[in-house]
Image 1 (cartoon, rainbow, N blue to C red):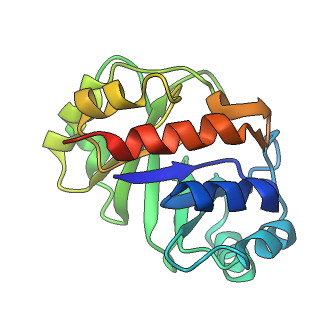
Image 2: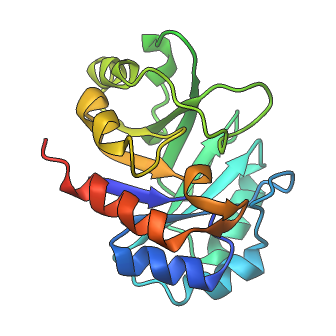
Length: 201
């Protein structure tokens, strides 16, 4: 199970996530996000992250040239794209807002190696703390050969149920394991990772 801790803004949280067994950490480069981190800040954190842990950059409607520049500066492995952004230089995880149904046309993006399904919530791009119906993610997995990642409203109390119902490749957590936006509760984070990795599929 791939377990991503998103919204990392400081070295302490990154180290705690790695120590707890996270598969990936996410840096948010969307300037309107309360979890925004500068490329320079992300680079300083990323230097302490072992190569086995994926470093994911979160971008919203960002120009491909800007994504490429930030990816190089911050040492990213993956570009997680919200909206119509594209990235020819890195593997792409395409974020899709989920409401009441999934459609096969959503998964026609040949650029994406994975689709991250998150709860649709107005103008917000992730970090809503709200869940969607997880069987929809399982349905999505039957509509595409690409990897499926479940996000939105997950924490240590519900991640196992989400995995059992959605059967995803990975899970992504952010707001529900924070003390405030951009600051992780290390106890909740460790419990989340342990619960996700303990799920027997």
